[in-house]
Image 1 (cartoon, helix red, strand yellow):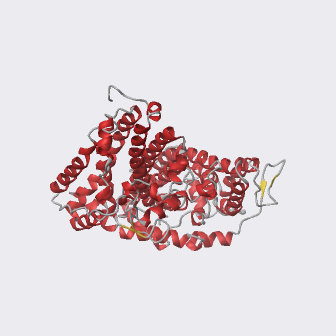
Image 2: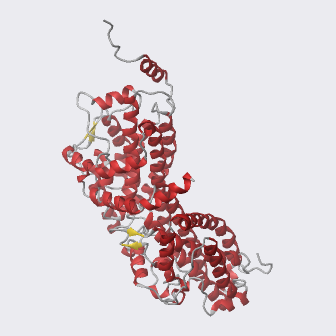
Length: 270
Length: 315
């Protein structure tokens, strides 16, 4: 943790800092809500039972991380975490477009034809990016961010190890499936490792040390990993930028599902 | 001419062990019929956990709040975990027959292996997720609690863990139901509708009542100390445990005849439609085909992933 650390109630009283912390938290919170949802969709439908258990567990932790991040935003804004997670418009969402994409054709209730290789590739890319961010976060001047970074990194390591295991299996036994999964991910993945123009402010304020360097760190790590597996990494095409609130229709669909019951009466106790 | 003994010495010794209260392990000798009964019972239990994840899973992403989303994800994951644990117990028993979990899944899809009636039912609202957690799991703990004393040790050990986790599931379901019962008129109506919908299925869960005699399977399982109570004894226990709790939430049980005899303490109740029960467990329930279809499609499409994992582990 940084020696001149700030507790979140001091951040709250400093508008510029508060804005930056909230913007960073939107990205990680919205990312984890989306990937957690996509993981949950596999529950009970995975290729084998051990994997059902694993995806259930990973999805639960992703959601748990999102809950933690939304809780920090609640502390900064006074808005309820449930409202933040479930009622915000799609244009206010900051998750990467890749993470809102469905697991394949159909959905978890209707005629699912899910894509395992894409699921693994997408999750792996998310895990590497979030770990890059969390590692930087452990050095944040904001105490709660540094603490969250340390705690969540511990769990992320297992998620990543799980996806890496499958990636290596795919590379060795079904390289074409892996290549197809990667090709699909590359259509959407360009905004994943992107803070946009706030990267410099994130760094200078100490909210996220090294923020401008992180996208390259991520790209290098991913490139090396696939090179080692002798898999060609496609170019990630620039497209919609979820970090700027641009999204596909898939996000609206996911949020309708996630908020279906809550919207019946957001004021009720559930 | 010497007469063939009715049971072999080995079988006599086996029964003697059971009567002494010995537990049987996977590697012990056992009569083929004992193995057959266990495989049947444990496979049904395993696929019921696996298929049982699906009705609640319909509500996992839709759970109302972040807290409820976390809790129900953990809960459904536990259920699949129970399926995993049980399918491994069944696999050990099936090994001498050269069969594996693939055979269990194939039997499920082909309709040769049945899963519990409750998991064929529709779950149209969030309150159904509450009723499943509270009362379906409550009913399951009553039957599984009986099987904790099962003579087959690996099953009894698996159940020990399962029953402990089910205890949390019941609290989780009860908490959902309590929030709805204490909530807005819309929430209370949602809960009452769900209870009304689930009541016959809950009674069916324990199986048809025994008339004057027990079925051959039941007698055999009692002799083998695989089970120790009848369907009706278990259902009576469910009434005693839950009727007053359900009523204390202000809910109406949809059976005007339900009453406990003051002297014998026996509960009298309206029998559910047992013909309908047979249809349901034969995969003609409201959601049987859709749920089997969901699991079958993803199982078939995931075959290459399982082959890949098998290839890797055989290297």
